[in-house]
Length: 300
Image (cartoon, rainbow, N blue to C red; front, side, top):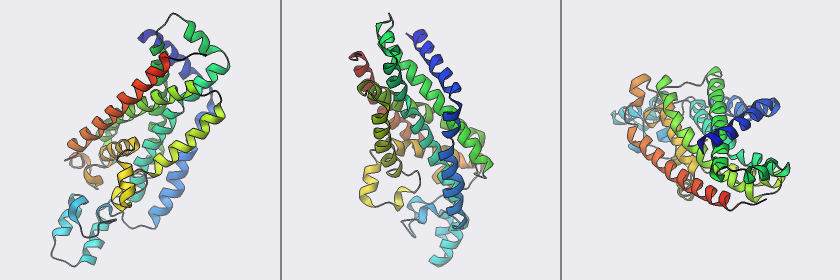
């Protein structure tokens, strides 16, 4: 099964490399978000006081340095000024959300290849071939995950070139890989299942826009959960992107997204990372089971 799945993965990756225009244009949106939206807003915010947005004066969501500032016997406005100095920049905060969104968008596009295979008759040949049908789905999922990782790391490189800081260094970048893999695999599984049920690319792109944009905005990708209305915070708890963003953000920025560097930035994030990964794993299992069921029932 794995050998057949890898053959399908190789075919998908060859198509990915040959579509140079699609490869280049897929990086335009993340660059626009970082270069125009992130840097523009960042220039107007002297410090992105994460724990103070939506909960002024509350120590519940402050980073380590902000917490010490909160304990100082000084007035609230002085605390706000000092806390702003010790908070992460908005462009650093936004970059982690854009990385997670890039993984989601790339993985979700895997269903398009199923529709094209059906249109040109290749999918019918795969179903008639003496290979397990699950291997077809698995090959598509692996290819989508590899594409997602490639594009995510390109976005990370672009972000660094634009001045985004990775507070946890190379260790933090390595910690993001499991989150990106499990997140991409789950989305690719449900996307390929959707591709089986659809007959045209236009309809798929309609669903793509209808699903991805709400997921993006109902998540902490561009704003903290604390700054959202209560009903939006509750909705974000059921959004898989929320846990992908949180895992990637804590991995790259550190504990409570604070400005501590190196090993200090990694303090106290183990429990949160395990929780995020456990939730993403449950979502992955559910999506893959749905996708596998639809694949077994699929006909041309």
